[in-house]
Amino acid sequence: MRRAGRGPEFIKLLTKEYQWIRSLDIEVVAGSPIIFAKTPNSQEMLPLAYISGAINRIIGVMLAIASTDRSVVLVDEIENGIFYTHQVALWRAILASIRKYEGQIFATTHSNEWLKALVQAAGDKMDDIALWRLERSENGTPVIFQFGGDTLRDAIKHGAEARGG
Amino acid sequence: VRSARAERLSRFLVCEGAEDKSFFERLIAVRQLPRFYIVDAKGNGEFAAAVGAFQVSRTADYNSLREILIVADNDETPSDSFGNVCVQIDRVFGPGTAPRTPLQKTPRTATRAAAITVLMVPWTNEHGHLERMCVEAARDANRNIAMHVDTFMNLIRAEGWQNQSRFGKAWLRINLAARCSRDPFIALGRVFANVRHNTLIPVGHSSFDRIADVLRKF
Image 1 (cartoon, one colour):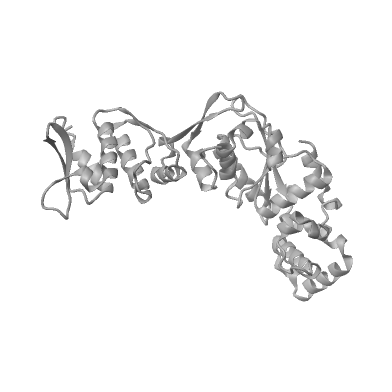
Image 2 (cartoon, chains in turn blue, green):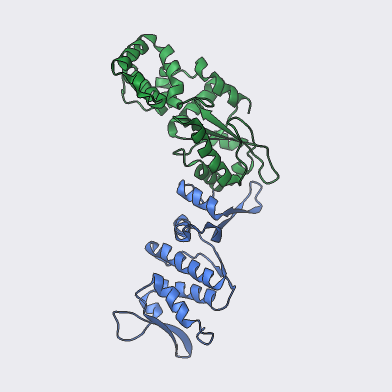
């Protein structure tokens, strides 16, 4: 990314939601690349995983989106390991990256909270999001139901169970 | 709702509030009208959200629908109230979907299996709401008390309010307070939902015939 000149804009996207991250760098430790971060409370850069496992995961997703234009990123159970108060911020950061790099993310979740956070993070740009729900029909065959962002927002607003069941 | 779900219905009725929902459930049960899934939109600006919620949370049921009936109050501005419903219909189902008049059924399309109809309460172009529609039934259920309520309304010069909606709500509230010894503050929804209170506003009254006839045709 740095070679492609995308480093500064990526840091800008990230720190917009996570202002306590001042800078990021990659160091090779014992032969393995590790992301280091500079925070206001530390004189030296620390391995990001030491600061927060969740932010480490988030940055992994965002790096995948930003690594190339029009990337397609798949994330299984995106909610894992991330505290609920960070959900909206994470979705905002991801949506900002997606819009910036014209990418697409397919994220699976079992969490209604994450769907609510996604709707909140999307703001008035409901065309940017959609819900695809995989379930079994009455005869046992798998089916996918697709809902646009507006419908998802309406359902969430009305307290519906968006995960089906 | 559970028994309705088990047999999967083809009709969906969305109304403004919990009181309307209780009323329609009672009306349909007593008059043996066609059965609907009935959903309370929680406000006249929430019809779109209620339809979306049903679509998302009960997708298989939604996909089986052949009829969608939206029931809204006219209040003091029937044309504005109808327009408000139409805006929401167009938002959910696409521009140009909304019917031009109440009770006009929009045709089904290749992408939408359900026809859409709007029923304005108490009736097309009549001011008021569910409470206004209930006044005559409550009056005939106890004409003596109704006479005293009329006297009281005259004494407070309610005819000068120039507001049919306010008048109807006030009349019905006073009437129910006088007649319901267990709870003068009884919610309108409980009048229909609780068998103990059903006689306060009998849904077999002729004032509900027009509404029942609409439902019967579905």
